[in-house]
Image (cartoon, rainbow, N blue to C red; front, side, top):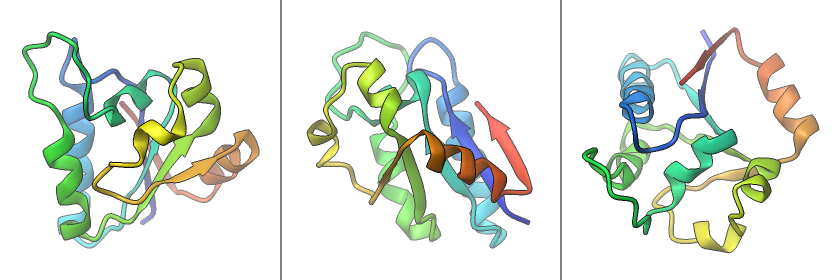
Length: 119
């Protein structure tokens, strides 16, 4: 079963971002090899030095655990970075390898997976 987890929620205001990562870790624990796509406001989850005042824990430590679970297919929508005013250089210190995708590649990614979960 191939699953794509689409991260569209900001890292603050609700638990959607953490819930999505929990689903990814659970799928990986059962050897399902989930893929993650950060798009829309979800790319804000990747800013490890965010100064937002939020009651939620930062997700950076969970991101650093992804390789231990063999979650290796992590993608970022280039257009979303531009829309959120994020330069790709700001993501160089991420604890995981991510691949930038253009709009056509994002569309193809959706077609390659049997299940798509959007958070």
